[in-house]
Amino acid sequence: MSRKNTRDKSRNTNFPHMETAAHHNSSRPGIGAAARHSRVAFTGQGGGANRGDVVRFGRGAGAKRSDAARTGRGAGLMRGDATMHGAAVRKIRDAGRDRAVESTKETTWIVEQEAELLPFLLERIKHKSRNNIKSILARGQVSVGGMKTTRHNHPLNPGDRVTVSWERVVQDEPLPGVTIVYEDEDLIVIDKQAGLLSIASEKEQEETAYRYLMEYVRRKDPASRIFIVHRLDRDTSGLMLFAKSEEIQQLLQEAWKEAVPERKYYALVEGEVRKDKDTIRTWLKETKTLHMYSSPVPNGGQEAITHYKVLQRSKAYSLLEVWLETGRKNQIRVHMEAIGHSVIGDKKYGAKSDPIGRLGLHAGTIAFYHPTTGELMHFESKIPGRFLSVFKQ
Image 1: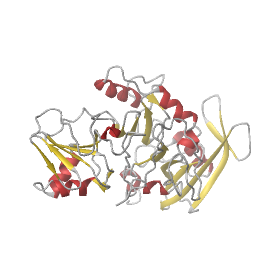
Image 2: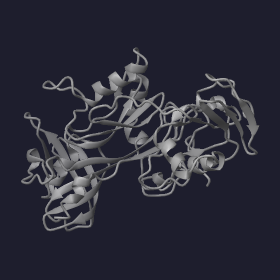
Image 3: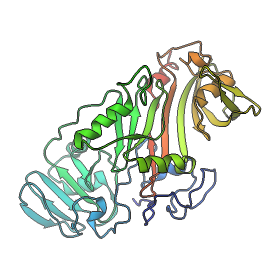
Image 4: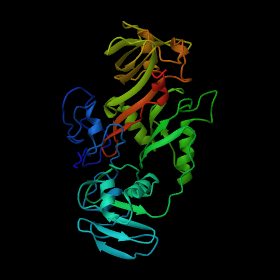
């Protein structure tokens, strides 16, 4: 299956030629012509990636496919050539479309043609069953270009280096309230649980996503740091993006609207929302007590635009898919109150019910252009099960 390539061949550090997300077909010169139907078609990136999959594009901007050093690992490793580290090389065999390097501890292949990871492995590991190979993937024993992946449909390109470790991986100590979805040399994408602060507040300095990630990167390199790119409210769960350098943080923040064309949330709100879809446009202003309020006419505050559609409804609750055109403080929560359907569990903005014991807001999708490679990266987190439970009662 072919993969659409969204990489800019030159190092892209200023997001050249980017457009704000819109509902039309367009090519993005300098980024790659694959980013079309800009708000929806992101799930098609990565050649056959299904909705709900996390699309990982790999690393190595600007490197030639004929050179396996494009992965940032194994400098000097060329197609058809291989260098092994660790255990002695036992045998080198020609596998037709690629060449394999084997040892007692691992096997490495250099990819010769486009493929997806699981079919690639099934064709080459004949002594293992399909379920065994899936388990090897799930345990993090497979890496592409030096980066571990567990995705069955991870796209492979000529020159990619695929390595299977035959030794079980010792898992890193889990981070409280944080799941790492994607990581490379520049960025970390996480799925944050509800109840965990993004960064420290006056009342809480220790238990934050920022602090846990800082500890995580410093296990590997004591000089490493983490920089927050955007925030989620403490009681909102879902996807967040962190930078590994101040330069990457500033590139994303300064061009946020162009660099991040899609953010989607799931909101569980009170009452039956009658309109199947709608757009809310008001002006938001903050009071001295840090409460945001909404006005239908300009009031000196910031314009805020929210789009939504109903996914499921009952007399008591509605589940909405929400897109942000702007990113104001508490925007979704304030807008839901403004239309008479407060987010459940949100007493600050008018909620009278709390059927699932948490705020009914989850950051389900983020799509952004990688500040180094220019690739369109798309990540999704499924709707929390508790959001759906209220419709089964």
